[in-house]
Image (cartoon, rainbow, N blue to C red):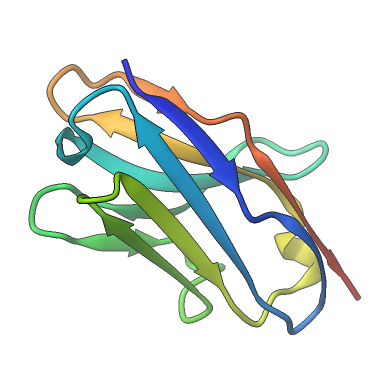
Length: 118
């Protein structure tokens, strides 16, 4: 099992930037695809970005392409999400996700609130 702890959320004005971090512990970090999801009030949780463990491929939701960048550091067991040019519609609770590529089990952090004011 892997434990995930997010940090870096907060309140920012539209056009601003935030950097989210996720620290993982418990298992071999490199065995997991890492990603970020978000859930706005009254909406379902949605995919934001992912960083595959094999090949170092990255994927983004269309709504954040060109504004968000996901990165991972296997030596430090961390994954980060740099969010630039934030919009009010980016307001949500952001969750770190670890997907075990062997067992297909998903693990989630507790979430961190991001609020973008207009």
